[in-house]
Image (cartoon, rainbow, N blue to C red; front, side, top):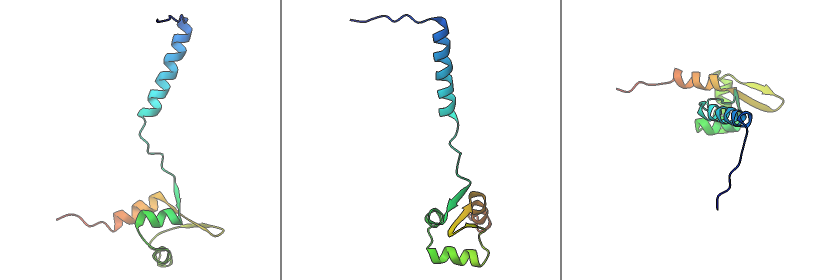
Length: 90
């Protein structure tokens, strides 16, 4: 047995607005990356050891920020280092 629900035009309009907001949120590309990543995430992304990360910082290969004992790298700097060391395909 089916039941009918009666809703007003205003309620329909509100429902449609909420649905459109949800659709817009889902349609947006998920490019909201963090601006900075921590040392552990950086090492994982690059597939390097803690010592290699330290060497890259010491040699100025990668810029970093340090707050207390925590090290952070900007996503832009990570992209920059990858582009700088990119080798074109033959």
